[in-house]
Length: 131
View 1: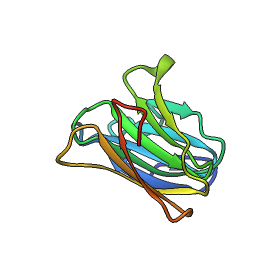
View 2: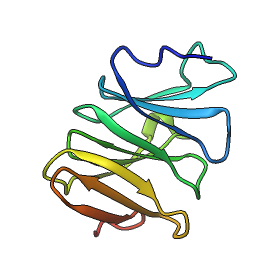
View 3: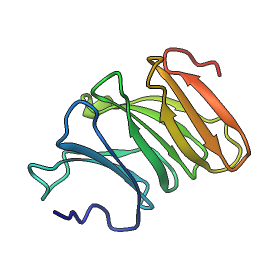
View 4: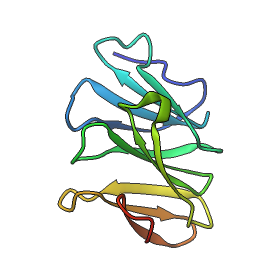
């Protein structure tokens, strides 16, 4: 199976840890799309918010509807795909260069790490604003 996921280059994809039919993709077109592979002809959801290319998307291993993303706009964003009208939960903007790496802790619920071209690694608790 193949999906023409975006109009521009796709830079990242991640499987939902709770539903093996859901995949999120991020692109140079600044969007994140969520796909149900049982119906690959149309995305389930499109998320907008980043100002530049989406470099990484990752689903939470602890909450089935939570997705994080990072971008060349130097931000890290937290999304809830179950709330399409109000899906963006958080924006962290501490990176001073491109944010390029992102991962949830598999052991500590709510913990997220991001990396960037600014030579920094930030650790985020999704329940707090502090680093």
